[in-house]
Every structure is written in structure tokens, then in C-alpha cells.
Length: 124
Image 1 (tube, rainbow, N blue to C red):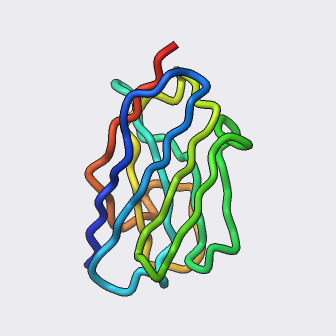
Image 2 (cartoon, rainbow, N blue to C red):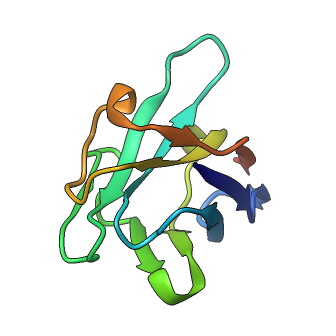
Image 3 (cartoon, one colour):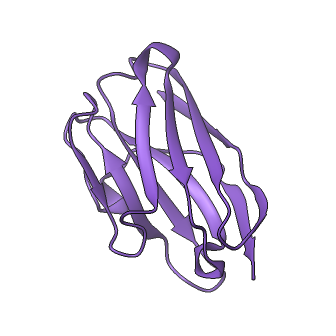
């Protein structure tokens, strides 16, 4: 089993930056592709970005492309989400997720483990 804990969320003004972290524990982290999803009130979880276990392949939702960067440090069992040029539309609870496959995925149902989420609020 894998446990995921997100951190780094908070309140930031539009145009600012935040760096989210997701610390993993349990089974081998380096074999897991990772993803970030977000959810606003009344809406389903939305794909944000994903990274393969090796870190060599990444994908981003069009809404965050060029502004967000996902990375991972397998030695630290941690995945990061660097968020720049934040917009009020980015306000959501951000969830870290892991899947027990090396290949990345944009589909939430293909992930096996989820963190508790961290709130990101972007003010105008």
C-alpha cells in the first residue's frame, strides 16, 4: 500500500506561485506513475498533470500548460507541482495520486492511491 500526503497549499494572489509537495510512503515509490488532480466545489476531479515513474514523460492539461511543472524525486519519495502565474480559476483542492504502473495516465480512475488534498486559493 501507498500513503500520500500533500502539502504546500495556501492563499496566493493572482500571478503568484505555489509549490505543492506530495510525500509518499509504503511500497516502492519509484515504480509508480504520479499525477495531480484538482477539484472545485460542485465539480468532478479534473486532470492537471502526470509524470511517469522515471520522470521522463509528462503531460499537462491545456489549462495549466506552460504555467505548471510536475517533477519527482524518487530518492525522497516526493512529487512536486510548481505552479506559476496562478489564476483565480486555479482555485481548487489539489490531490496527489499514484498508480501502480510506470506509465502515466490522465484518467483519475486509473489511479490507485490518493492523498487527502491541499487547498489552493488564488485571489484576484
